[in-house]
Amino acid sequence: MSLVNSMTCAVLATLLQQWARRYLRVAYPRYGPHKRARIRAFYANGVEKLHLQRAVDVLPALLHISLFLFFAGLAVFLFSVNNSIFKTVITWVGLCVLVYAYLTVLPILHKDSPYSAPLSGSVSFCLTGIRSTFSQVVARFPASFNRSPPFIQLRNRDPRTFQLSDFLSHSMSKTAEQFAFQLGPEIDLDSLMWMFQSLDEDKELEQFFEGIPGLCDSKMVANTLNFIKRHEKMFSNALTDLMNRSLSSNLVSKAVKLRRINICTKVVDATSLLGPWWILRRVLLGDWQKFLGCVEFGLFVQNWKSIDHPVTRFYAQCVAAITMSSVQERDDRWFQLASGPLGTTKNRFQSHLKHNDSILLATVISIVRRTIETYSGSAGRHRSDILGASSRTLGSLRKLHLNRISSDLQHEFCSIWNQLVELAQNDDRPHIVYVSTTILKSTRKLYIRLHKKGTNAHPTAFSSTIDDAESVLDDPSSYCKCTVDEHRPPQPVPELQIEEPAPEAVISFPPTPWTIPGDPPGRVWV
Image 1 (tube, rainbow, N blue to C red):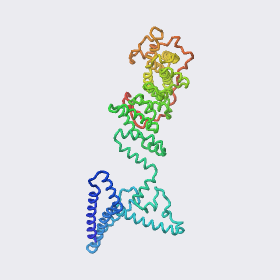
Image 2 (cartoon, rainbow, N blue to C red):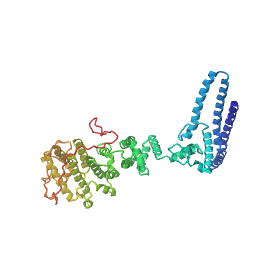
Image 3 (cartoon, rainbow, N blue to C red):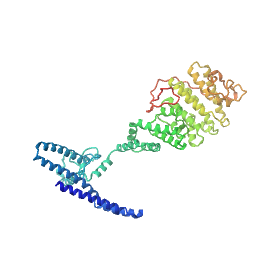
């Protein structure tokens, strides 16, 4: 019988090869695309209607049956020849049958199983018949099944629980599809993770991060945020590396850099991949300074809600101020950005609009006040960075046109200058003297432009062309006060606020370790 079965399989294999060759010959004729498509559709309907796929699936099943019959015949033969050999062979045959049976029912019990056997479909078909018969019996005699055991009841449709209806199904593939559709959003996030791990080009990473804000705004917000939190380190490293390559490469166009900066800004706004302290310090003092030319980033920083540390808030004000001075086009977004760092009333800001550079000078005054306040109220380990950020900000704001500045602001600036000179020359606290002198050094060129030569208010110890590294600029006695009567403000200007350092607060640092160019060796911010 095994021989007959083998011959039958050989004949079927020959027929299948002949059918395949005939299909390739008749379904792909040498016609135009339109006629060829019609002929392919015609024969494709025949293939589906006559169940060619089932006929192909029968052949491996017959081959396996032939193999089982061979082993069965071998066992019968050895039973009468040698009992020891018979026991050995029957043991191995039994183990193989158990493994084969397990592989047969595995795709029925586990819908995502990649393992199967040719008889799996047949077993599923038989179980489908059992289910159909059982359903008819239940429908005819419903009273007899009111108290059926829980494993027989077919009403539970929870895809995560094992139940009888899971394997009594019409089709294994159809049941697997329905099972997948009933799963929660975790499977979608797993697919997203697999896709992310396959990305190896910057353009693909850009498209991935561009879709993150929309994903966070979708219906599964909680699941998405938890998913991002679980893989925070991986995503933050990828985003940081993408921005590092984009900003440092000369092969990336300015438009692409600006687009990726906007994408990074939106990702940071929607997630917590990069903390405020990390990104602001890197933009101000590190290698991400091209962010300062993007208005969208400045507006985002200005409204960053998760900033709760005074040093970080000061960095945000510096970033907004530098961005405001870097952008040449003064549209509605620029004015929206400019109204943030001033800390003034709406009416006063409207009055500054009459003189374009008055907004910049008002920002200079605001940054000077914030520098004194933040520096004096911060721990010693932050003070060098605060002065670095302040000097960079004030340096970007000192190129002003005097004819486009209101006189009231010029007079307020002179009053602030006098307060700084007083602190630098007469205060008995070394750190206050140091920060006041540093601010005077950063704003000296603006002061010189506001005071002509020949007056007592003009500095004599240095000129506007002197280099910042000259030691004379570090001497508080080199600076003079403004004594011009016309420069006195009509109303008293508030004094500079000097704070006492608060107890050390815990700062949440970024998930990715990094260094800033110019930091001492071994200094890593984590």
